[in-house]
Image 1: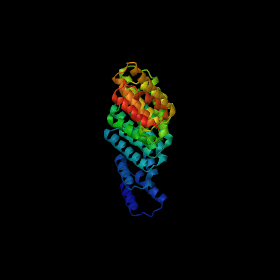
Image 2 (image 1 turned 60 degrees about the vertical axis):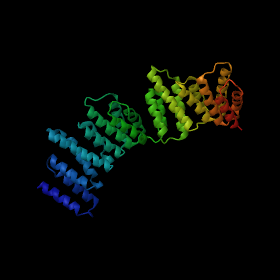
Image 3 (image 1 turned 180 degrees about the vertical axis):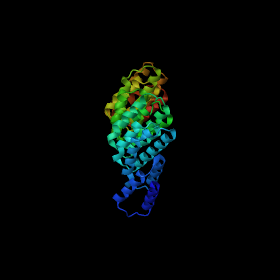
Image 4 (image 1 turned 90 degrees about the vertical axis):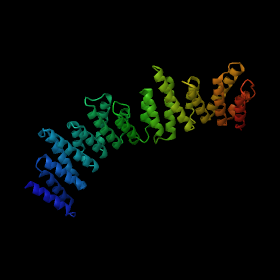
Length: 389
């Protein structure tokens, strides 16, 4: 008899589009409540969801609450599977309907249901409905998952994936840090890559969050954070501030071994490339540009330091380039020249010319009149001097 009532109600809904919303809601409730057994309830849920009417969202919330309350009744493996599918169906629809009133039931599902796919679906639903009250709880859940592999790694990965998507949809800055660290945690490549894809959507301008990471994390994480900042929607000045901070911290750090020293150098090089690309005029970057030239890990870092000074072009940067050129010129005049000094001199000269700053002209004339330089260096100095008004 109840099955007939259910079918009749569904037919009634299909042919009664003008029924008042309140009446329709009561009919929807009848469809589910009159269903007998988990199989019928699941079928009724699918029929209701298929209608695509947001009016059913409160009924789905009630259904989810009832499923969670009665889950101990489902002991067989087939019932447990059907129960999980029912909860997932409710969660997905509630998320799509953005029925925030059901967020608490969805969080209960995350905590109570053992099936990882169901946990993930419930988490993603909370994210889709932008239930900000649960942002911190989801962030803490992901933070704890990041720390070490779960006993069942597949289960842990699926839950982490759901948490990452949820935090992406919530767009709450509190989710930035755990999603960032998920990008190099123990998960499979699929989960780590999703974390990297989700990060830009959590914070359009992640500058402050990236700075926090730069201050305390290892060089490899600093590099990831710096690349994220560079690709973000942050303003140019904010990106310059971050690059300068990365350089300052990078020059203070004492590497533990050669591998860490190499990665730390990669961070500084990337920061210098940012400063060159943005033609950073910041006076604060001059000292770090000089530090990379004088103490660089390799010639590449030294040359990037010179390029950043050239792109800066301010008086402090021009003074730095002038002094570098004068020292190199004196070394060569004293017979201490070599291939490296020649390479550095040409780079310093070219970058000095690009500043078009009168401060560098004297140094360029000194090089051009020193016949101990090769013809290529003298020619470079002559050409650069012509660029200076």
